[in-house]
Image (cartoon, rainbow, N blue to C red; front, side, top):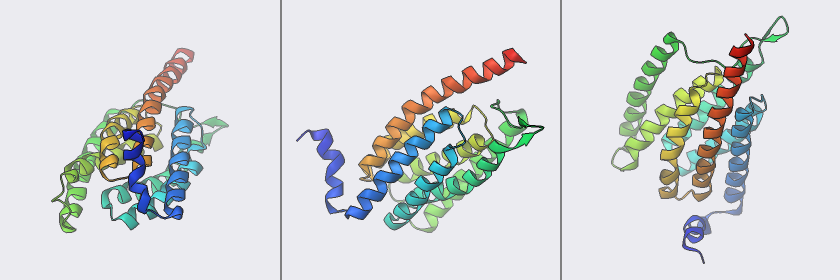
Length: 210
């Protein structure tokens, strides 16, 4: 058997069929939702909410606190994002793709620092700081929290947060024996790069028209 394939599949030998099925569905819908973000399509939210809802269950069951919090937050922010993306004023989309304003940059930085402290504190509270993955989990959690907030507000910079967090998550999920999820983050990275390029084209096009 191919060593890479074996490395991805071996952890699932002790998993139930239900667990494998749920993770597979969550991974597929997660990829679909990121593709919809790339296309600036509102379907990102229903597909993403189902995916994150499944992951909330799986990660809580696995005791992966940081990852659980990320997905629970995704679910909540998806409700806000769905509302924000669909708002219209006089028949025109109220919030098109845009860049972060100075105020949003300040709030984003503050939010990132607060989340580092908060998530780090939770890991300490649950005595999970003794694992080498804890600092990276804390960092990626803060990245994804800010990235999701920016995505919900249709700010192009959210792709940068996704790309950095996705790259770090690929080996992390392999270590956590969630091979399908690791593969998902690899594909997330590729889609995020193309997503940034496409959003930049849309943004430049809208500026040219204006």
